[in-house]
Image 1 (cartoon, rainbow over the protein chains, first blue to last red):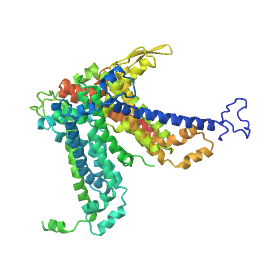
Image 2 (spheres, rainbow over the protein chains, first blue to last red):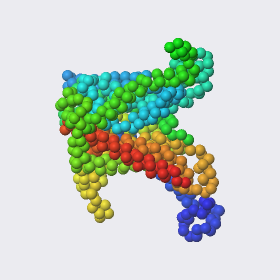
Image 3 (tube, rainbow over the protein chains, first blue to last red):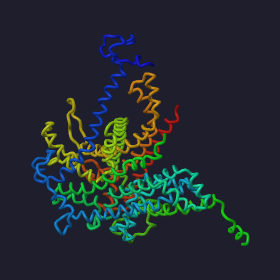
Image 4 (cartoon, each protein chain N blue to C red):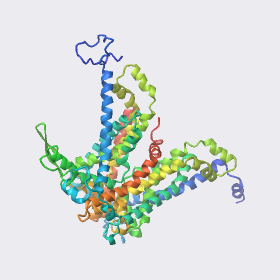
Length: 312
Length: 320
C-alpha cells in the first residue's frame, strides 16, 4: 500500500489511480489529514486549557468580587471593584464573626503532615522489603496491598465508623490520621517499591560486603539515592490527606472546632447565611497550597504516579 | 537441647538473615493494613447479618443473633435497584468518556511546542485540586439563579429558561424535531466526573505514548500510512494494554464514587449512586446492619463486573 493508493483527490477531476502531476503538490489524503490534524491540535489544546483553567479563574474572580455585583450581573467575567473582605471573613474566628478557616487550615495541616510522615515511616521499610528481600509470603503481601488500593472506601467506612465510635476515637484527628495512613500506605509502598528497584543492586551488595548491615545499606545507600522518590511519595500522601472528604465527614462533622478545610467548605456551603463569595475565598485558600506544591514538584509527581505502571 | 543450641549459634546465611529482616521490615505496614483494613472488612461481613442500629452500637456484641433480614430489606427495596442502574450508567459513561477525553488530550500535547510544560501541568489541575473546592465552583457556575452558565445560556444562547442542572431529574429537549427525555442531573454529574478524572487517563496514556519508539511511526509513514491510519494501526495497538488497565481502575473507582455526587447533588434528582445509598442508610436511617448489607452487595456486584471484564479481555487478548 502506498500513499497514492489511499489518495483523496480534492479537485475530483482526476480519476483515482492515475499518476498525479508533479506540480502543484497534489491533495493527497495524507496531506489533507496532516493539515486538518495540525489545526485540530491547536483547537483541542485551546479547548482543554479553557475547560481546565476557567473554573479556577472564576473561583479567584468570585472570591474578590463583592456579593452585590454577583447578584446584579452573574455573567460578568471582569471586575469593577475588588474586595478582600471575603478573605477576612472566611479566615477570622467565629468569635469575630468570621468562619474560622484558620482553625480548619491548622487541623488539615496537622492531619496531612502527620499522615505523610507516618505513612513514609511505615511504607519505606515495607517497600524495601518487597523490592529487595525475599521472605515468606512476599508475593501474597504485595497482592494484598494492591487489592486494598482498589477496595471501596465506603465499605470500609462503616466498620471504622462503628469501631471508632466504640473506642471513642470518632471526633479526634488521631483517628482520622490512622485511617489516612491505612488508606495511603498501600499506594506509598507501591510507588516506593518501583523507585527502590531502580537503585542498582550491585551498589547495595558492595555495601554489604564492606560490612554494612541491611539497615545500614538502606540508610546509607538506598535512601539517599531514592530521595526524590521519598519526596514524591510524601507529597502524594499529603495531597490525598488534604483533599479527603468522606472520612472527615463521617468522623468529624459533629465537632466544628475539629473540621478540616474540606469539611468546612462543604458544611458551610449548605447554609444560606454564608455568602458564596466568602466560600469562594475559602476554596481559593484550600486550593492554593495544593497547586503551589504541585507546580513545585510536578515532574516528580507525574513520574511517581506512572512509574512502573506503564512499561515500554 | 544441645543440638538446638548449637544450631542457634551457627551464624545465619545472608538469605536467612534477609528473610528475617524482610519480615521485620514489612510487619509495620502489614499490622496497619490488617488492623484498619482487613479486620474491619471481615467485620462488615458479620454486621451485615446482624440487627444493628446506631443507637445500640456501643452495647451490641460481635457475634450471635445472625439474620438475613438486612439482605431481605436491601434486595427487595426498589431504591436499591434504581440506584444500581444509576450507578451502572454513571460508571460506564464516565469511564468510557474520561479515557476517551484523556486520550485526545494526550495526543494533542504529545509533540513539543512552546509552553507545553505549562499546558501539561494545567491539564492535571482538575485531578489534584480539592474535590470540595471544584464541586463548589461547579455548583455556583451551574446555579439557576446566579450561575454564569445559565446567565449566558438564557442571554446569549437563547435558552427559554434557566436549567437547574443539579436539581432536575429529567427534562424534555427537542433535537431535530425529536422530543428526547434527558436525565439532566445525572448527565451533569457524569460531565463533572469526566472533567475531574480525565487527567488520570491522560497522564498514563501520555507516558505510554512517549515510550513508543519513533521508528515505528516513521516506518508506517514510509510505507504510506496517513496520520489516522498510523494512529489506528500503529499507536492504538501500543496503547491498548494501558487503556485496558485504565478501564479496570476507573471502573472500580467510579463504581465506588461518593464524593463527587454527594457534593454536587447530595444524591438527589436521580443521581443516588450505591455508595450514597450506603451513606444514607448509615447516617440518615441509622441502620448499620442494612448499610453493611448494601455495602456488601455493592462489593459483590463490583467483583462480578471486574471478573466479567477480565474474562472478556483476557480471552480477546489470547486470540491471535
